[in-house]
Image 1 (cartoon, rainbow, N blue to C red):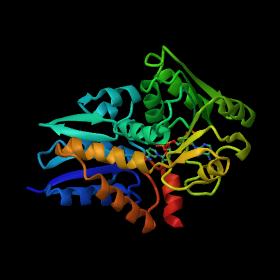
Image 2 (cartoon, rainbow, N blue to C red):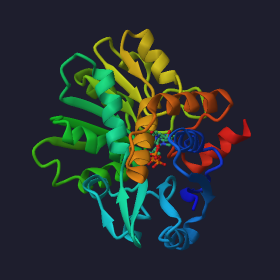
Image 3 (spheres, helix red, strand yellow):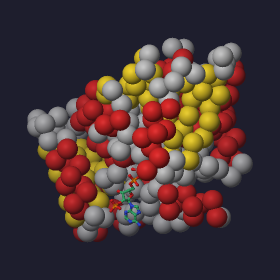
Length: 297
Ligand code: NDP
């Protein structure tokens, strides 16, 4: 029987995951098909019920369902429970397990960015959505001592900080209002800056003014392209990375969860690059309005 893995999102036509996951199944001789399921929020419950069937290996879940799907599965892994977000589902009999592979994906990207240097202890995170939750949890478990979260809508950043209250009890995790002068003061003190907003995804703008960036800084943009932020940061002498490694490694971790086999990373990376060259440029987790904008370009 050909097994099925589905990506449940809304919209999903822009996804880069299909190409990399199908190529990985084919390469390792896994008889499985990766399908894109565009499901509006009201259809999510039915979609989740359907993947309890025997022909399913599991699913990926993306924007806007990562948080909404949490109460619909039977068990959560530690990362899914801590972040309050699920991006991968596996099946054990009729029971569904919710995982968050964005967290290990982010950690691979962070480790590569830090390289041989000492892991920093202070970070500034821009954004408070699903991506930011994976980032903040990754930083907490990496032993960061001070993490400042800026978000356009402050209440969402405050909600994120409250959500991590207990796991961040030993450190300083704070939400701050999105004011240039405050961002500048905090970035000046930090060694790591992570952009987890979608600013720069469909327009060539940076979330921070260029003067904020300095040569000691490590800058990670979750967006899978060379954004204005990354170009400005490189020009300022900072060390930079885009969202490719995170996207690749969250996909690789999901592949292993479904199949029990190590993922063919090089092949998956090549397929991602191909899909991007072919004009599909969004990472997973792209907000609906941004995806619509990108598709229209
Ligand atoms: P969400 O929709 O959950 O969050 C979007 C974030 O961007 C919010 O913090 C939002 O602020 C902010 N934002 C959007 N537009 C603006 C704007 N014009 N000005 C200021 N802030 C803005 O999305 P995700 O967290 O899932 O994704 C965020 C980004 O991270 C996307 O670009 C996505 O592609 C990328 N991503 C990459 C991954 C990877 O594997 N590389 C994994 C996950 C995400 P507000 O709350 O105020 O609206």
